[in-house]
Length: 184
Image 1: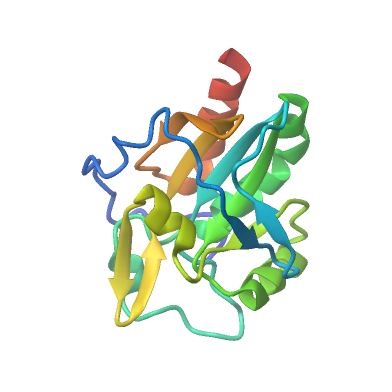
Image 2: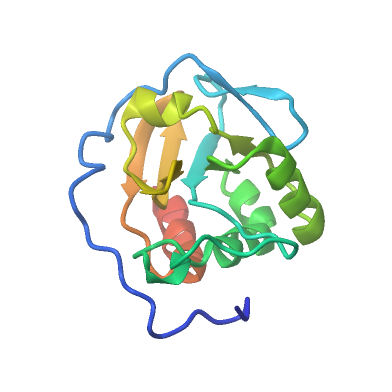
């Protein structure tokens, strides 16, 4: 797939209410490994906001995508979303916020993506679904593999202050995210 444009034929995800319970929730006292295998604590009292964006999976050039990936509403576009956040990283930081990506991919897969795409922020692996299960995030499955649906949370002192869900198109979500950070 061309990374600059998404197919106009992609199915659009619908708001199924699966994230309605998240506003004002507290992140659990757990840690997840980043792309280097270092643990990052989720429940924090930092003075900056954390922008946690969950994405299903970023493909690797050396592997095919799962069967029928582009037919699943909201599945395609993870690389575009991540690179749009990368491209606006300095602006996000200037708004007293830090982005963190989370998927169910392995640390090895996340490191490959981070290196290939020059990602300057942490990408966390929730391959054991620890965070997903703790806050009850929406998922979809292909075979035995579970993927977290695309969700963005703005977190202040461990409390979820804003939920973006569903997100489509993923590469234009950055505009909505920056607008919210500037006005809140």
